[in-house]
Length: 271
Image 1 (cartoon, rainbow, N blue to C red):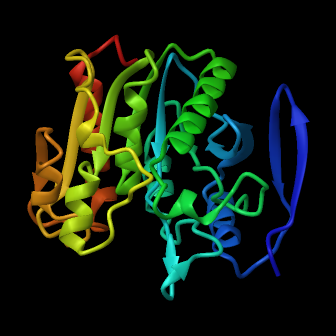
Image 2 (tube, rainbow, N blue to C red):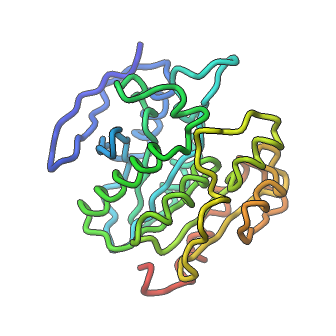
């Protein structure tokens, strides 16, 4: 049985009310969001709709926008029916962040894959394409406007880190970018894994550098085999290497220190 959704329009945002369901990746993801007391909304971007998760108790002028990994683009040699992430790691990082923060979902993820504008290339070869990035940017602008936020810090895990860098150059409100285990050069990453290159996608390594005033920290695990250190280094950014960590472990342990470093980096400007 799939996820049952009831939607209610409110102030230009569609609130998502979870009514049950089981089995699918999106259903399990929504259950995990509910377990963590996160409020779910559907926000319209540019041609796509996006899941937004947030806590109800945090407000302020700087918003941390969390972007998840690629989930499951492929399954059994074919594009997955539902690419939604199976791992709740980014939800756990979000919950540890006591400041204003939201989870911004990708087009066609989280039970939205059946919408008319969706096609499997948007979570396979074109997962970082112009339509995906443009719609995420539009959805983020809407979130910032509704919350009255003046500044944004992008936080991206794995493939979400690639998107964080791509998005940071598009919103002038950007004051920071944090990535974790991110494939910041998608061509080098595909070559290393012996995958076909993502021909429909934008490569963060080929984008203009971000302004010098933008805070950047790019964390990578020394034992990461999914996105190895050398692949990330080719993204042309300064890395923070955590020797004993891999792609999944143990970023929740480090996260309070990551957020403390962010807060110390520009007191007042990021508050």
